[in-house]
Length: 60
Image (cartoon, rainbow, N blue to C red):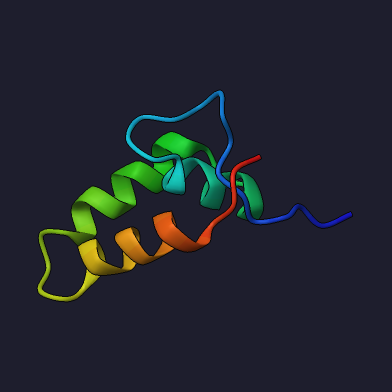
C-alpha cells in the first residue's frame, strides 16, 4: 500500500512538508528536515520549492 503525499497534523514544525515527505518515502521526519537544512546551504531554489509544496500538499 502506498502512502499519499499529505501534510500530517500531528508532526509539524512549520508547515509539515518535511514530515509529509518523510512519511511518503519511509524516512524519519528528522532526517528529511536535516537534509532540507543542509541543502539550503547550497545554491538553488530549495526554499521556493518548500513554499510550493506547502501550497500544493493537502492536509491530512
